[in-house]
Image (cartoon, rainbow, N blue to C red):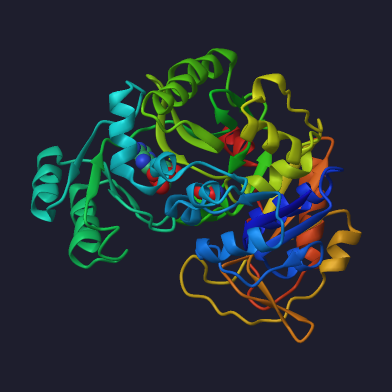
Amino acid sequence: MQVLVVGSGGREHALAWKLKQSPKVDAVFVAPGNPGTAAIATNVAIKSDDIEGLARFAAEHSIDLTVVGPEVPLTMGIVDLFQSKGLKCWGPSKAAARLEGSKIDMKEFLRRHNIPTARFHAFTKSADAIAHIREIDGPCVVKTDGLAAGKGVTVANTAEQAVEAVIRVMEKHEFGKEAGARVVVEELLRGEEISVFAFCDGHNALMLDLVQDHKQVFDGDEGPNTGGMGAFSPVPGMVNERTMDEIVRRILVPTMSGLVHEGRPYVGLLYMGLMLTDAGPKVIEYNVRFGDPECQALMPRLTSDLAEIILASLAGTLDQFDLAWDPRTAVCVTLASGGYPGDFKSGLAIDGLSQAEGRGATVFHAGTKDKDGELLTAGGRVLSVVGLGVDLDQARDVAYAGCDAISYHGKHCRRDIGKRKEARKKV
Ligand code: AMP
Ligand code: GLY
């Protein structure tokens, strides 16, 4: 089988790496990929949002299966386009991908199907949103309707902060005119935040092992939110059986059946961002793709054949499938550029990758580029360094030994990935 992976980050490197291990897979192409994927697969110079170009490539090169990493091509309708040309492409249709593409679509979907979530109101005029915020006169959350690269959400502790966010989004158009044309103002939920991932085939869903991301840029969950500074899996003791049962019964099952009912059954990887509140688990958001860096922590632990899972998902036979996991713990640490998620420098020389691998770590490339054989930084998140170990401590040791072997100017990582629980115990 010839497989094409769409995307260029650490998530796509991990997907390509895992697919390549499948006996079913003869060749892997990655579009556009990065220097990490170039070392294990063939990079193709087509951008991930050029869905017509990708379809042409897949048809011309007899690609048997296309796996889409990022949300943008999915919300553009890459799956529908491929299907119309008789090409196999794994992910949700354009209609199903609206769960991530539009916050308002998502919130109204949740309301229609009685799935627990924060109370909300949607607005098309900034004056109306501001009047509503003044009425609440307390903490709330302001969300840009459209895709805003994970930055369109403001958790406001005061009405002033919320009003400011509305002005930035709707009047100053910080995320573009389209994404900022509508906003959602919702109730602020309190509790532990978790992500649940499931492989879906339209009707059946297979939950993956739990994984926890660390969104803030600095140790101790300080500083601004990022795309993800690290992740670990499994997360024992985070969710008890009763809560897990509630997540399945009140969230996963109604999500799947709600989408079937609306004629947009969900095929692909569903990412549920949940808050475990005193009143039970509630949906914060859906994403229509794997988390990054959660994927990099999960793929080294998945012992089932990813290509087989994806084929079963496309065939609607996931009910006949069981996922198998390596019992070890994986810790994935993001090596970022100094200054990220704000301004940072790119084009800085990276050293020490083979030493990191020599110390037992697996390194996935996120934002790197190759210039005449030299590896340079090319993004806010540069590398994902993964360690496996019999327990969290050992996995952390391997991951950080890898991180310490790697050098570039301004290198930044959190030192406390996987330590959140211990920190909380001390408090
Ligand atoms: P989202 O892009 O919707 O996942 O939002 C980004 C982050 O904002 C989430 O991961 C949460 O930490 C936080 N957040 C979003 N909505 C809420 C809410 N209603 N209550 C509390 N925190 C929220
Ligand atoms: N790590 C969070 C995300 O991928 O959205």
